Length: 110
Image 1: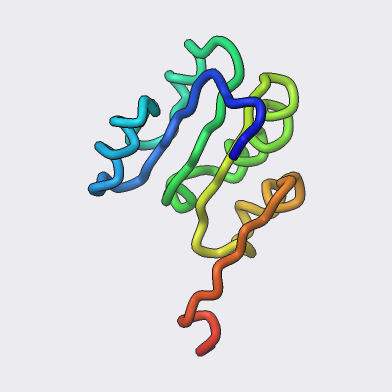
Image 2: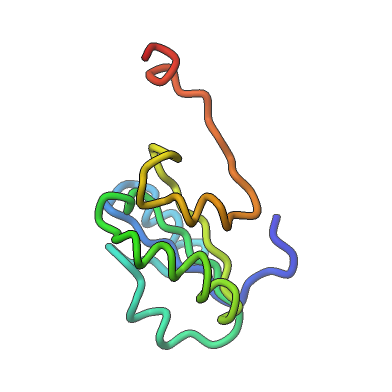
């Protein structure tokens, strides 16, 4: 649970799936791709969830989101990635308050 509850939640996804309508039914705004236009029109606190956008997102965009924007614009960021050690998420990893790691079978076999 997040306290205080954000005024706005944006779920940005890379590929449409069955979860998108479910998320929308909870009153969460959704967008295919990066939420740039939505963020311009937001008032109040915002929680941005980037799901499966690691490949489509530049290092500069992620760096800006996790440093300046999250710090100065009352914004929280959650980024779902498959590789926490990818070069374009290094700054985000270093600026994250929490890291949630899953124990994937494929990584244990490498």
